[in-house]
Image 1 (tube, one colour):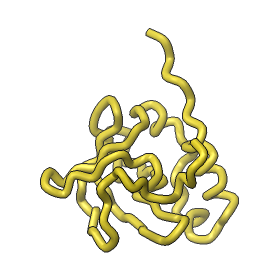
Image 2: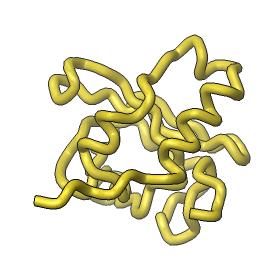
Image 3: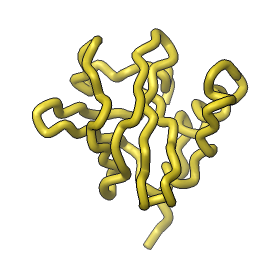
Length: 120
């Protein structure tokens, strides 16, 4: 993936100013939770997903570049990662997220280079 993982893809149908809070988030293999917070900061766009009971109430930070589609009618966001890939991502840390470029680099690197799915 050569593009910036922190930028919404043009094909995702995200429109600037759209409020994604409360949208359901679908991984490639099922639902992972709802958007708690989102940002459209230039070069640093993301969504924070509250996973509820799926990962014991954990929140995850997903860079906007992994969003493949936003469906405003259904209030759903589709990402191109599996539940396991998201579950195994660096843990969301609110303190580090708020101003630590190393943390964003770590998360960005993880999502820019997805691990292959295990063979069944």
